[in-house]
Image (tube, rainbow over all chains, first blue to last red; front, side, top):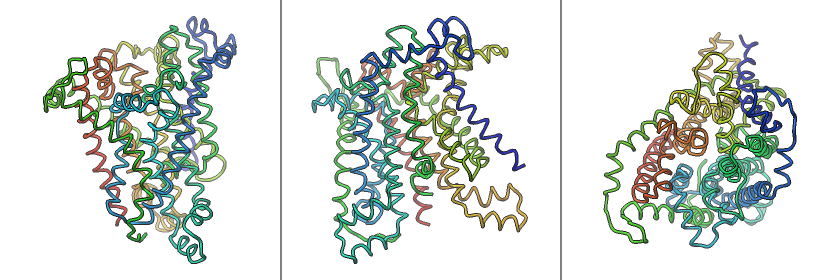
Length: 266
Length: 287
């Protein structure tokens, strides 16, 4: 029985790849071919859709904007989550459990609930339509997640490590940067990956908080879908390009990804 | 791990607290503020007490959206959790195929949500989509833009496609943490594969599965972008989940009061349920 178990994952992976294949194959087709006939692979292979995206600033700026705010968000979330996660994993303090749960509740908040108030808040502060606005807004769900993951990884590091370092004469900042951070390097990588991922895939807040200057690629796509009729090939090409950054980062964290999804607590 | 009491730890938490509070408390207060007022435009607001809450809680429209939401969430949990566990059990434990499986399976998780919606929108089209065309060629009368049943089928299939991998990855992380000795001991005792699953693998997966169910519950309750791109809540209102309805009221009709009251009720439902999960999870941790 054990010999044939490979069938299940294989069938599952084929199921996962089919819609992706359809998107990618459509991106190499001309609009005429897409709408005119049903073809399993591109008959009239074209790179025109990709050429449009790479030469039209409204398209490629979308990618640049997305990458900028995702990077700011990742750095910011992990940087502030590090000390907080250390505090949660090493110390007891007044209200620690309540605070931890409160942080988690923000991971649960529906973005639809916050869309309008966010728009008003960020307009009032005067950073509407900037990369910073989206990066800050995404910390709402990424910081709790980063704290949760890092706390899991830190708790599996024995406390003796801290104590030995102090006996050896390390000050706290020296210990934290020179010993502790390298020790939980994998955890930091995983936390950064998850912040990247959730900031990259989120659209509702990113779209609400931007107009022109910082508009994410995902919003450019929805706008194209509605305004220029049915340019499916172009849309498919843009969609295909949004998959690539994700595929690259997955490759780097592949050995830790499962542990990361378990929030460092396996 | 035994922790020391140290009130200065608050300073470590402070940056997180400030940032999250800025993002969470101010907008939440705005929502609370709207939920108890009435406006006729011109920025004039009148106190309306709990009228909006009463209106929402007794409205058929809200009940219908909530019902659809619960149906959606429980259906996808009932499919994704067993399916995910099954796939994780069948995955290879060693060798290069592990990485191949993990990378390919994680792919759907890294695709922007509107692209997921758009991808399935195209994939399901009866004339030009692979899924739609195949089903119609096989003799099914499939058209998700017209028939509510087909819209639901596509919506659930899309979510299974998008998120089952999360359950797989979590369950797999639990499985690989089981030492080989356990399996050897079971072999010596002549345990059946069901017994191995029931008494060794399932208990080891309990924690990660709780996290999986918690995450899937929260995220499926919050789902907005994918269904709004796929079906836009249609045909009619047949796939209008809570958040789609909320955005329709808040941004479509600009009824801020009812929308805000609905937001708060919505948030409370998620909060209460998640709190139960969280309580169960942390209780196990302290054992």
